[in-house]
Image (cartoon, rainbow, N blue to C red; front, side, top):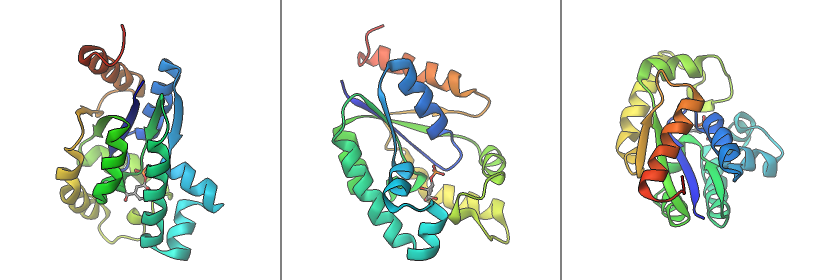
Length: 174
Ligand code: S3P
């Protein structure tokens, strides 16, 4: 069985939806950010602060390559996985790519509460920075085979929506 790869901006729910989806299907679960942290023995903010973004992106490409070798696995990715074409190329070869989206308001709200995202720290106008970054990446996330707007949906409802799509597509038996 193919993998299910979740892509989308920060705060669209990739990790929580991914875990639930893996549970429902009896699949394995991998989060590329968690893999990077595990291997570095440091948190993402620490990695950015100590080694910079380029170093993080290189580790992210390695994590994507390793994840693409798996089977029967739900793969949650970091929001920037789409920044390098090779990442999504590798992951797509291993399965179906599902995009998660949400409105600017929801993303701003969902990402406000955490200090785990270095790209969203120490900004004068946080909302404007999120808007600009979303705009910049919009076309990249459109490469998903199927996209779910997670605004107003619980993670479980998002999972149901994805399962419906996979059943219709014939990737899952009912
Ligand atoms: C990033 C998203 C983060 C994490 C890193 C960079 C991005 O993951 O990989 O902070 O460039 O969008 P989440 O999407 O899980 O927050």
